[in-house]
Image 1 (tube, rainbow, N blue to C red):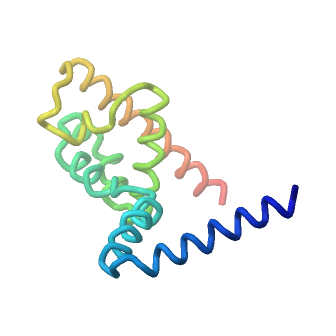
Image 2 (spheres, rainbow, N blue to C red):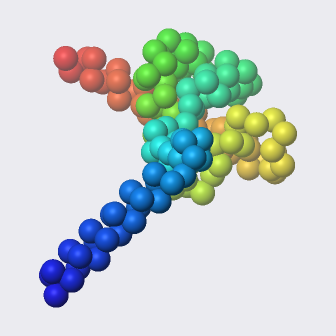
Length: 136
C-alpha cells in the first residue's frame, strides 16, 4: 500500500514538472505571483489609517496625553497596537473601518461608541506601559 502511495505521489510530481515545462514563462510567473501574494503580506498596514484617525478624531483630541503618546509611537509600535485594537474590535463585533472610512454607512451612535471603545482600549494600553516603566 505504501509503495502505491509513493508511486502515485511520484507520478503526480513528474506530471507537475512536465506540465510546468510546457507552460509559457509568463503564465508560470503569473501563477507564482498569485500564490506568493497570499503568503507574503499577512498584515495589512493599519498604522497609517490608525495614525490619521488619532490625528483627526474629535473624541481623541479631548485625550491629549493619549493622543500625544499614540502619535509618538514608532511605526512598528503603532502597527502592533493597531493590530491588537483590530483583534479586540473583531471580538466586540465592531468594524475598525468605521473609524477610518468617513464614507462608511453606519449609525452615528454606533460609530461614536466604537470610537469610545477604541480610546478606552488605548488608555488601558498606555496605563500598562506607564506601570511597566514605574516597575522597571
